[in-house]
Image 1 (cartoon, one colour):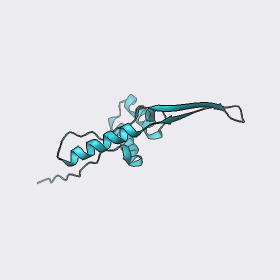
Image 2 (image 1 turned 120 degrees about the horizontal axis):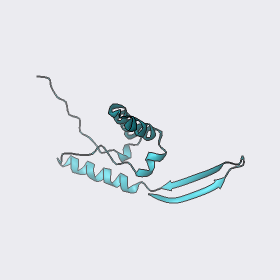
Image 3 (image 1 turned 135 degrees about the horizontal axis):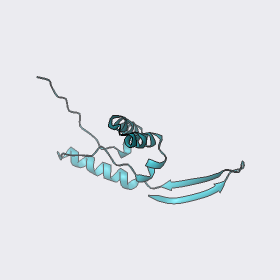
Image 4 (image 1 turned 60 degrees about the horizontal axis):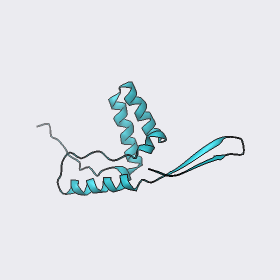
Length: 101
């Protein structure tokens, strides 16, 4: 959630907006689900992304474009890149290996 917003003009005449956001709720939800996952619960989400991040994070902007174009693979690729860059929002996933036998 946006907690503070500042609008100012730079020396070259450009107007800038600076948003301060609170990510504690998304981080807490990811931790909570990770702890439940450790206790054996199934159907765990990949993570929690604060809604504000969709408007400025480069990987999520590209993910939105891919989703709008109907490219599910590209969408997933960019969302995974986001979670690698911001592990605090990711839910800890246990690795599973499947044998072809």
